[in-house]
Amino acid sequence: MGAAVHSLDRHSGAARAIARKLDTENNVVVDPSSEIIVTAGAQEALMATLMTLLDPGDNALTPSHTTTSTRVTPIFLTAR
Image (cartoon, rainbow, N blue to C red; front, side, top):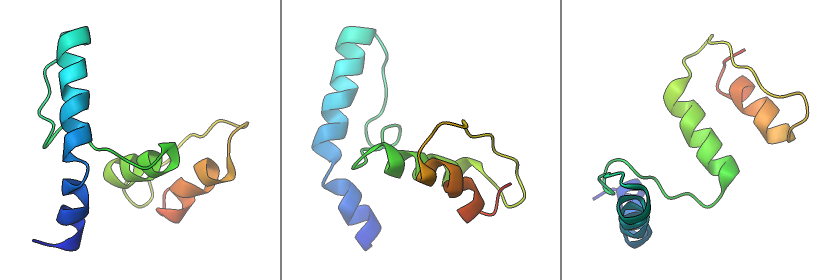
């Protein structure tokens, strides 16, 4: 088992708790092992999302009043 898989395993309890909450309070059923990612914070979640969605050369819109990391993340990922 690789290091990345192992580090995600540490958050499996949190992912299961989030899945239970979504099921109980929102009537939304999700698989915590494949449909929920637990991150250390919003910037890490944004980076993971953009790394998944953007391809080199894609255009990305960012708000004008935002953090520096939000503005430069698409550039770092070679999007425009």
